[in-house]
Length: 365
Image 1 (tube, one colour):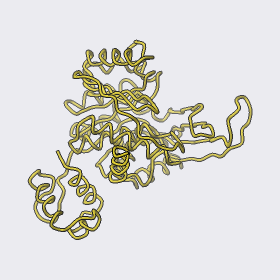
Image 2 (cartoon, rainbow, N blue to C red):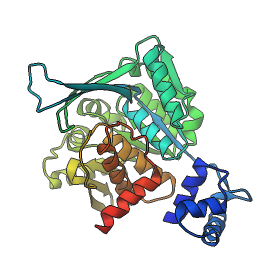
Image 3 (cartoon, rainbow, N blue to C red):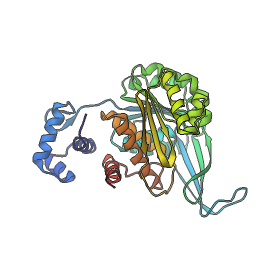
Image 4 (cartoon, rainbow, N blue to C red):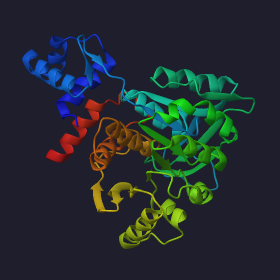
């Protein structure tokens, strides 16, 4: 288990392997002697190899699922249905799996994306942007179908009114494409599967995963309903909201007691961890040992799109660093708060240090 200071040093060295002790000390506001002690401890833990601050290659993340372009339209005032509303639009790379992968890349983690995009300008734009964030894209297949799109209509406060997802390209992600990524899946530290997957692709990924910690992100109620029977005894964690939890279990989830009962039903089906998102309130982290409520980090709302994706990516980041699920969930809430306060689906300046600072400020207030 790394200390906070050790994590900061590792994050800096991942971004600049040539940093010396003096530069590390300046970046972290401490002394060279202190840095040398931490580096020595990192060597004893096997994180740094020999001289030159060479980081050991740790197992990374593999994210399998949707990659598409996000089209957003935001009303300038309170939206009125069944008529035209003044506002503005934007376009940026999106998709649940792709967003999670980009967030992980920006956090300095080694991450592979397994997905499908079209042989069109949108697909080229999406791939170049994703690779520039540090994501490995060699397992993103190409198709003659157009690159998928997710069109979201937001009200003036940035809250989602309605969204339309065109995922025909993602529907071509089948067992053959998953099989091509078998080596990176089998050696991953964390495998994330999103609910955009066809059942046969999901099941093949689970076959390849073996003992890898696998997280299922349901994405939506219809997709959770379609895939719920494929998860029993095969995933380590699921990350639903209330409605998706109800779809996964066929149980009511209106009250906290009902949510806990539904989570317990998933534990009985072999799911070790159930992380239920409760919106502005925060989340419930349920294991066989009990349930922990984790409050959301207060923030101003600019745009809610992508908040859940950054939350899950930050969760995986802490797991990959050896942290506990509760530590990971708290880190995830801080990442979500930063994303909500940004107009971007994936916040371009997201770093572990920024998340840690946000979390520390929340805990000290």
